Amino acid sequence: MPSSRIPREIVHFTRRVNYASYSPRGYERNVRRIVPGYEPLHDAIVKEVRKAANRRKGKDLDCVELGVGTGVTASRVLEAVLSACVVGIDVNAHFARVAEAKLQRRFEGRGSIVVGEYSTVLRDWKPACVDVVYSAISVHHLTHAHKRQLFARVFRALRKGGVFVLGDLMDFEDASKNLAVSLAALRLLLANASSKKVGFEWADHWLNFNICATVEEQATWLQEAGFSSVKHVFERLTTNLLVARK
Ligand SMILES: C[S@@+](CC[C@H](N)C(=O)[O-])C[C@H]1O[C@@H](n2cnc3c(N)ncnc32)[C@H](O)[C@@H]1O
View 1 (cartoon, rainbow, N blue to C red):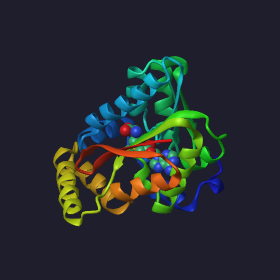
View 2 (cartoon, protein in one colour):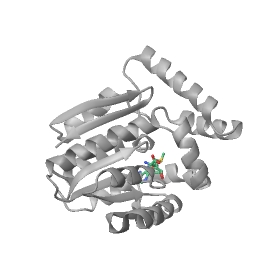
View 3 (cartoon, rainbow, N blue to C red):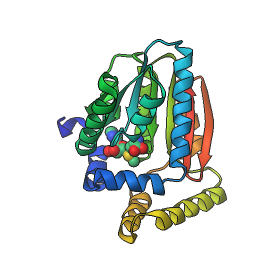
């Protein structure tokens, strides 16, 4: 994909927050240990995708994952929801190749990968073409303006009744709660990283490159994008899940 089509801030992200420098195996081991509530977040995402599948009453469920990484979240969804097909989008070709091989091997035709910046990819799709858009630990890399633009594009891509399942690292409006959960999450990161060096690398990433928005402002932006209901369904320190219905 030509970099001229990627927004400037995202080019900055791909150069500085360089997931390509992580080995896929090391990344997978650490993300599980470091992100608060990583496994229960996945259970909660799967639960929301399953609910959407039940509403479709056995018909195919077209899903999109924003930031598919090495395919961990997509594998959980495809394993649990047999009517789901997932298109995973990621700007990092290195991770995307790993995800593609994993999904092909385990789920045959139900998982596919697009390498690109997800907001730009969604902009070019026709409206109302998917049932579920979900994401785990990815959108916090966008600037707030780009998050709002993304939410509008997700809304446009969803069919009526479709859902956006947004799992991510988020702040809170309440400053003292925010400080308490951020410090606890950082402590957990440093205690659980596979080595001191990895802990410092991830702490640097969190403190200097993450652009977290609050749960409250993102709920407002989702409503402004047109979603008729927005629910905060999961919370574990900085890890939160919002579910928005079109
Ligand atoms: C922390 S990983 C999460 C991957 C997977 N959901 C998991 O839990 O393992 C975040 C992924 O989002 C991707 N990403 C971040 N911003 C992106 C953007 N604007 N467009 C496409 N991919 C993006 C990164 O390249 C990275 O692979």
